[in-house]
Image (tube, rainbow, N blue to C red; front, top):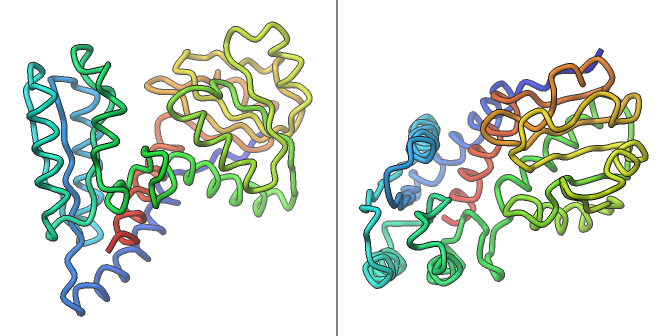
Length: 264
């Protein structure tokens, strides 16, 4: 039976250490503050923003949320970003994704307008920060290796070309993992999964990963949203697994806040 990773407890430990760092910054007159821009009416995005705001408050940081209507013009969004770039009160700026369909064609230009020194979501190609979800997965893998007293190196990333998968593959290779990149359309998907010691899935396809698709004792990291890519029955075959909710999500938020502190 797999170790079920407790992302909330792991994130709470990280938040405790971040809170101490915030106290040190405030003693020097530095007050960590993030600007979060939410465009349109997306209940899931509003939930994520609220979770980030509460986590920031727990460590003593601050988030100002800018709610913009779905029909906002591209030029208006750029104007807001430019004003936040030049405002020294803000150490970080992030755009809550996904954008409304009407603005999707401007996604790269909108993200590219953020100062790379304030892009704590790590979405610019030249950002000074690691994408929080990628950092969360690496942190969890290190925890799995400590818990299992093992040193696996082969990883299969399902959804490797997506918004999460692309930066994650890059970071895993930096960490000297051997990475197989696959998608839901890969013909020999099960074969690739079964030869991998670690499976990371980030497709958003609910319960895509079944027990017969992984090798015995595999480490399984579920980054699927909102319902999880991994069937719960996989826990009977894996050695370590992250649940949804309560797995990667809380750790991602703490990693975002860690980037905010670094930006200070």
